[in-house]
Every structure is written in structure tokens, then in C-alpha cells.
Image 1: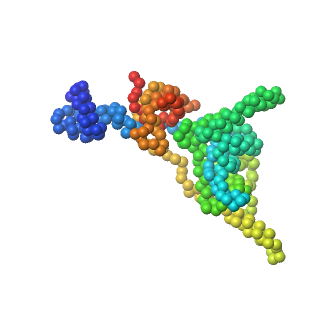
Image 2: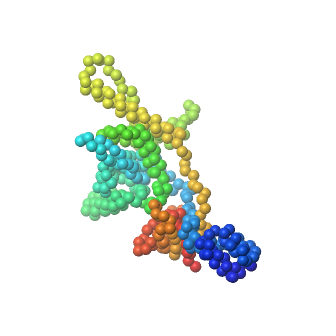
Image 3: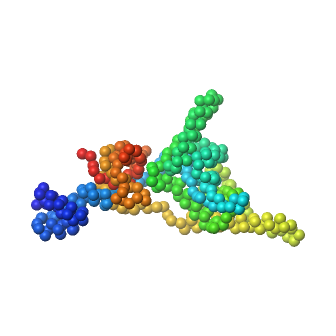
Length: 388
């Protein structure tokens, strides 16, 4: 009888003697000595509940992907009031001495209007991030909330910005009424869960593909790279975010720039007027040749953008992969998925806190791993032992 305790002991002994093989191998081994009716019903739970097998073949918790947009992306507000922020790069450029240098771009996108703002940063230091944030605030206004990843420069920079706002409020009575509600609310995504920042990662992919395909291996100066990035910003902000008109009675498609500068034209004429004067100076001819090359590069930017917009991939679909039927609970012992580390070396941890999203679902948890507390998404955790 497969439900008898002796049958379970026999199956457990076979599982260990076969060095943790699968249910079919266990059934073949047992049937050489015993006849047990419903042997598959017996061998499968043995493999499923084996801790050693769970470490190698266990499935993670099911991740509750959102099916509706959060309120921060649907409520009417001014542009760049709610911002998604990320870096991309490095971008190579030619220094004034002729050497090769590197710089990065800070991308900020409005979560409601989908407008984009690009700022060049020379390195990944906190001071460069703070200066880029000052330029963003100076031109787009102070954001009410920011969502980004967990880069060290971001974490320290946000803390310094909020601390400066608090000190200004405390030191200046005239600013109290104005800055009392200006502290920036920061939400950083769970570590190693980039899909939680998909709202800005998709824009980063569009800008990177368009920019790097255009420049290729060419080396531009710092000011030329900055000019091309601003051109990219204008092109992205000119993209339609509603359906293009089909008939004459249809309204024009809405662009992100229309929320900031209605009916703005963000592109200079593409053609370069050729002078009829044959006695033009060498400087004029060199300038016209230089403008022609920049216009050709800008035209490539537009071409790459439209190819990406109309022939690119559609929204991502989530794989229907197998997940554990268990629901994460406080006290569960889990195996923590660690990038670039073999699975047999993944560390163990204990769930100490469930982090609820605004819709009440658990997408991230706090884990005590050795002596540290870390955050991970639930689909990066494989349950091993469960609490009673």
C-alpha cells in the first residue's frame, strides 16, 4: 500500500541510494524487490519534498505581475511631476587633447506624458548625479516622486537632496510654506528585479538603439555628443503617443512635447542651403561641410527612431513557466537566486518581512541572509522548508 509508512521509508531509501534520481528511476528500482500499487503517487512526493532536490530543481514563488497601471501613471498632473530615472552608457568621445574619453547620459522620463529629458554626466559619482538633478529641476521643475534602480550614486544623492531641502526649510522661514511639501518621494525598485523599472527601461532601450546605431564607431567631441543627445531628446518627445489621424476629421496625434510646448517643432531644416557664391571663403565651405555631416547624422537618428517605433517588438509577454504552489510567508527558509553564481552555491535565507504593493499583493520580501537583511523579488526565491 503506497500510503503505508513502510512504503514511504522504502521509497526514501531508494531515492538516497540512487543519489536523488527522478520518480521513474525510483519506481524501477523499487519494483525489482517490491510490488506497490500506485507507486508513482508514492515516488513523486519523495522527490518533491527532498531538500537536496529542491536546491537543484525547486521552482520559485509565483510573481503577481500587475494587470493595471498604478495611480501615479494615470492621474492628471504637470509634466515631470512623477519621474522614472536611469543611466545608460558609457558613450565614447574625443577629448580636446585627442584622447578617448567616456561619459554617461542620465535619462528622466515623465511617467504620465512619457516625455524624456537627457542630461550628460561625466562619471558615476554622486556629485555628478546631484548636478544633473539640479539641471533637471532647473528646467523641468521639482519632481514629486522618482522611481529608479538601486545604484549607490542614486541612493546617496536622494538622501542628500532631501536633507538639503529639510535644512533649507529649517533655516529660512520664508521658504517654509513653499518647500514644506517639496521633499522628493523616492521609490527604488527591488534589487536584481529590473522589470519593476520597465516604465523607463523601455525608453532607455529606444534611445540607446537609436543613438548607438547612428554614431557607430565614430568619435565625436563632447559638445557634438551633447548636441546629438539633445536631438535624440527632441525626436523622442516628438513621437506620437496616440493614434495617428486616418481621415481629415480625426484630430492630430498627441506627442509628449505637446504637454510642455504645444505644436512645437523640435527639428531644424534638414537641408543645407548651398551658396551660389563661388568666392566663398575656406571657413564657410568647411562650416557647410560640417553642417552637412551633422544633418546626415540627425537624419539617421530619425530613421532609426521610426524603424524602432513601427517595426520594433511589441510589449513583452510573460512566460508561463512553472512556479511553486507555495505562497511566501514570514519564516520560510528559501534559496536566494544570485546572478553569476552556480545554483549549488546560492545562499539560504529566512523571510522576515513581506513587502506589500499598493494593490495588496506581495512582490518583494525582506530576507535575513547570514547577518544581513536584503530585499528580493518573490520569483527569485525557491522555498525549501516551510513553517508549521
